[in-house]
Image (cartoon, rainbow, N blue to C red; front, side, top):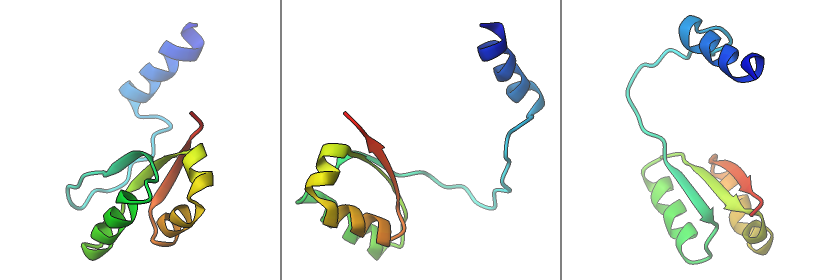
Length: 87
């Protein structure tokens, strides 16, 4: 257990090994939306994000992604990140 959990954690936190550090030029936030897409609200949200040129991450449910593939394509084409939840 030590080799798989504690040792890698200490190595990363104490020495910064295997960590990719990107130079930060300004502060920011990450927008994450879960459990979609919703046929009513997701398009409205995408319109708002587009208006302000904001990118977000959408964690979508696999069953809803299959049900609303056009919304998934729009999310992708507008440059947002997509993660799939299989539940």
